[in-house]
Image 1 (cartoon, helix red, strand yellow):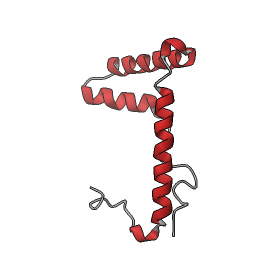
Image 2 (cartoon, rainbow, N blue to C red):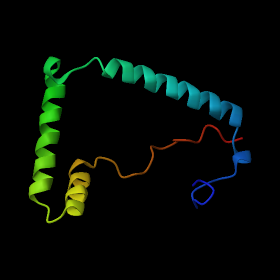
Image 3 (cartoon, rainbow, N blue to C red):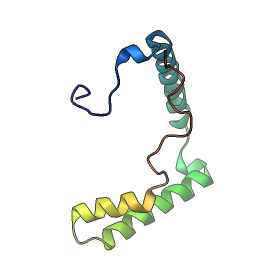
Image 4 (tube, one colour):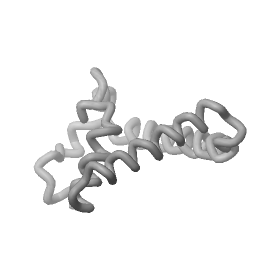
Amino acid sequence: MLKESQHTEALELYDTKRLREDVENDLALLNEFTTEAEKVRPEDDPKLRALVEELVQLAEQARQDSASDEAEVDNRRSSSSHTSGTPPSGFGTGWRG
């Protein structure tokens, strides 16, 4: 898949040892976050309960406003979209060799 993508760069452009270490550290952090997040339940956290309720309402509104299943997916995406798809400034620049 990556070989066919037009959005790839040569591995030689990067400090692969440092990149691997950073990715492994990020994975460990994400696993820690997952472990902690699994402990939180909507019934125990009013903010999470409010978020879940809001997401349910958005999904229901998307369903009501949609003429098809595909339109419903598009409506959910546009309702919950919060980023432009552009990474933050400086993102991914630290591994260049």
